[in-house]
Length: 120
Image (tube, rainbow, N blue to C red):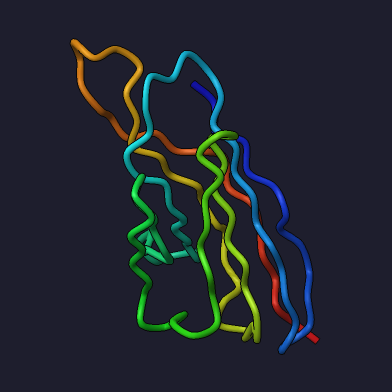
């Protein structure tokens, strides 16, 4: 299975970015997809997750500025980030909890990171 993330880049404070992450492979089902972020010297932290029925959860630090959505037909999750702040600068990682083999159950997988830099 592969999780291909894209959409990172340099943006000025107050600007917007949209991240995308597409899961590919012999996927039976995807339970949860989400985004995490990490800065040097810090642990990876949750940004937002979305379940297969559309339930969402956001970190307090991004509530009201970030929207997570999902296209189940495309196995793709999106993260729309608005009103970006310098403290949002981080490497953003896509995560999916999915099933490749029903006998083995669901497991978590990570995509490669995409760098988001918020700076003037």
